[in-house]
Amino acid sequence: MAKGALNLSSLLADEYSGRILSLTFSQPRSVQEICNLSGIPIAVAYRRITALEASGLVKCLRTDVASSGKKCKYYMCQVDVARLTFRDGRFEVEVEWRDHGSKEMLRVRE
Image 1 (spheres, rainbow, N blue to C red):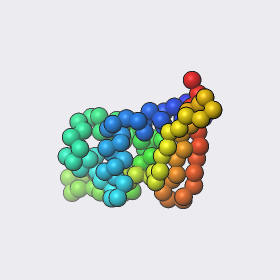
Image 2: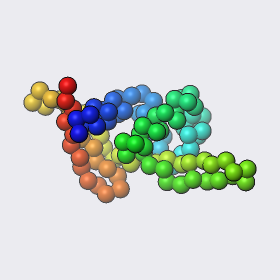
Image 3: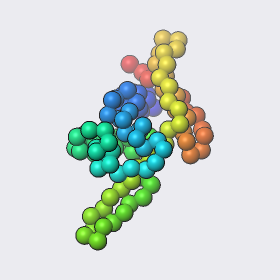
């Protein structure tokens, strides 16, 4: 769990991840839309989306398929509130998830 908390805190502190979470907070967006709106390079955006999805911070809501067969996925932020705090000599990450309103507290170990 500590490794997950450390990964989560790194993602939440990352500038590009923050832009992606902000852009996908109110509506689902494709990686191309995210890049066009944020200026994030496409390769970086795909890497961040992969990491954000693996951690549960974003979720693919739908996949559109063009007549050419090309797939386009649309992602939505799954976080309502995220906090990184330092308490009793340790960092903690607290996340309130949007879909079920639950809270999760993870401690970051050194």
